[in-house]
Image 1 (cartoon, rainbow, N blue to C red):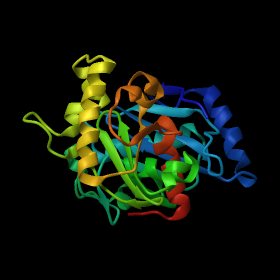
Image 2 (image 1 turned 90 degrees about the vertical axis):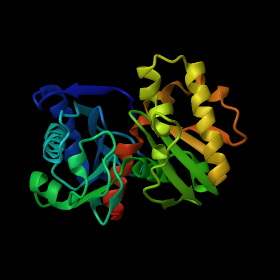
Image 3 (image 1 turned 45 degrees about the vertical axis):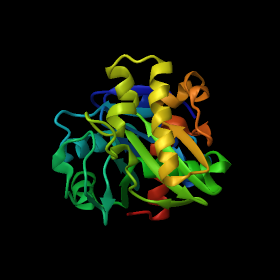
Image 4 (image 1 turned 60 degrees about the horizontal axis):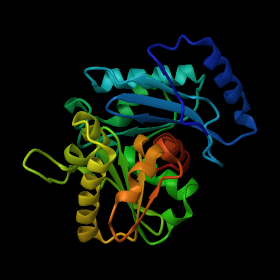
Length: 279
């Protein structure tokens, strides 16, 4: 599994397509799926080995369109599937609360997503195929339970993904409590938790790792008082540099980097459609 992206604006790269076609052709003898992770800055997709969590193609990425309306984003998902030469079922994460396959919120994407029928949207753009849509952090939590650190299955666990926002997945003995969205808890006069302590906040305010870790530490202490998790698992792109900030945290709980790092959303989406997870 690799952490390298290749960012595209259109499906024109011939070399990745050849690699992806080879991977797709092995679907008869490998347990493969396709996952897409929709974020505020980029939309990523890859073919996944569902037994190991390995990405068997590169992780394709297209910048999130502006405005990030449902139709524009769904069209990007179609392009990613074409890049990977994939024509099977697909799991898709969205930065939103998902209930009965309807988006009930919209975080870091266009507000027109709210009340969108996600099955209708993606079937209109992707055709008739099996599609599962779920919250992005919940997908990451599913992936970490099934293919990540074994401690994700034990007791009360809170997984947090740091990126454009802060996603949360609440787990108890490996079972998911969906749509927790703890990054949106009100925290300061200026905004919510993710405004204060996301990795985007670090970049926006040009904070050092020491300064940013102090903010994350505050947030984890608050979550600890509210929910008393036994362990925190931290993911998102900034988890690749966990050694620069995790040792600075002072919470009593153990804090460990997600084993699947920034791939967890893609992997969890692919697992969700295989397992029929459609919140």
